Length: 184
Image 1: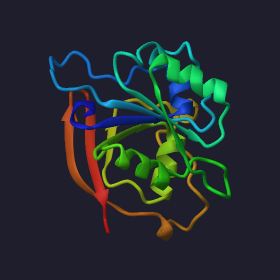
Image 2: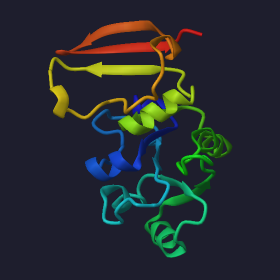
Image 3: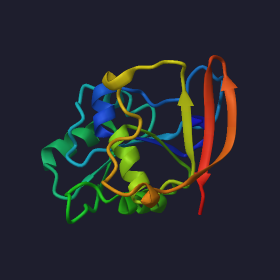
């Protein structure tokens, strides 16, 4: 899936917790690697992360709030990362996701794969900015201690939540893959 997108995005929480590379590996593809995008309002990601260490080899863009610490921004740019200031939501102070997508669009990103985490996924869903939802499911029952794929959604009536239509359901080894589209 990464190979078929211009960019792959995660939030700062996922980037900090998982220390991912967000690259395309082991497929023998000669195509250009997708831009790795981190939604990190405060540039909190560790400068010793694997993303920072590989910023020279594969594009890494950090989308952050205006007015972040100039020294921190310069340190990230020194790794080879590109820093993009982004508008924030006036009520929450979080990155304005519609504005974030506009920044990416102006930079030529038209196919964006958001791999999470849960908070970013919930925010995109709440803002009605998702045009395709893919769910990979394993035969595991993690229970309450598992990490949610979609974070907390606002208090609403069940009838207020967006509806989705199942387009694809298939087995992938012992797991399942389902693709959903908005039922607009």
